[in-house]
Length: 561
Image (cartoon, rainbow, N blue to C red):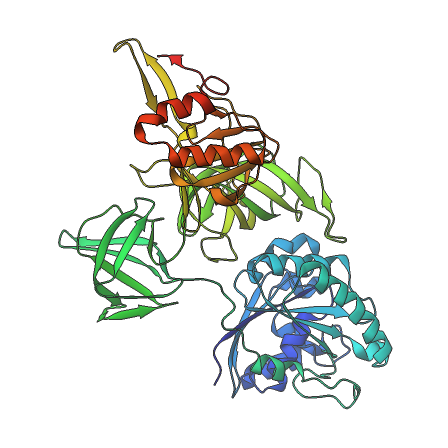
């Protein structure tokens, strides 16, 4: 038997989502006798003139039945001979988009229903975009109500073109289109004779056989700590679910953000001691020594994650009140909840066209790319790399309502371990970030001292601080770090390249050395001469070299403290 498949049904209002799942349950004989009898009796007073209304199996609330729409998310568990399933039937009405997003957050696959008589609608597009935002990689577009268009192949092909355009716009990786009729049962659990031109599988057959494994890029072991278990003074265990990789007794792990290391002393799975644990398993881990670990910390081994103060995130706004730039929220990311400020909306996304729109506010059900600054650095990563460390919700600090959900797209202002200094890093390349040192004249000692308050690593794409208390660099400049043989290109305050100095080419912008002094170079020829003289200068000749090539006071000054 294949593994568990978690999927969601979504689409516009009255596209037949509840009916489709109800029909699968009914046809597959997955109902108890009393459920089947109750369904038949309820249908007699329903809206189908006595015919079985399969949607009643999922529309459990009285308000849902009265309105004929789904309001809440209905979860159903069922099993066939080939597979086990959990399905979330979600609302189609725009008012309940946030309910739909909750259902999407748990799913591996999305079934998006499209009414054959109406085609792709705005809400269809919104749901497809939200499913993509939530990291769903597998999509089935079920062209429903084919009976209403007389099972027309040409009509299905027209809708197929609309779907193809949507797939291209959202870059959906795995898509299947299945024409069907949820009320009549065509292509739901078995192939239909009414649609002979369709050569693919029926919906249930497709769901039973699709492989949804290996859809993650996650590398290494990491476990977000949910709880520190301390039943007595002799035991201190760290509990959580392993999100990636495996761990064995004796392995060395690092606790973030403290960056302390320890070895795994024991692993408990429920109440049993085990030698090894794997992805998806809830465990309690004890260590061979006391280190700084609390709820919200992340235990890692080989996972390339770090601590960041600022992120760029794609969000779905779920609050009735519009988004406010500059407002403080509680941000829940992984197992950590921390204050954060939404500082900027880069752009909103037009759900219908995908166009990027400039805006300073966002209303309910809007989607936008935003920038968020945390009160302190927390463990995070891009959603594409580590899902659990890349998904978040914003919580209103007054009402405690969930204001938005979203995923991390970019990371900024990485924090590094205490004792380390600022640096420029890309892969194995590492250049000292001494351009951020501050120079002060100490009136007590009558001497010039330097400090480096910035303790971060910067890489390509990061924005760097070009203005400090004692330095002020232009927005566009290059850095040649002679001691590390590294060249850094900065354009618009952002790093665009970190390369070996041998590959550097003059960019017609100011050039500074690794300490922020202006370098008197204005061509590739002068750069080559600079590098040659530096390589040839012995320690005794370095003073003359720097007097010839560098100027301290172009971008720097000494401030009295």
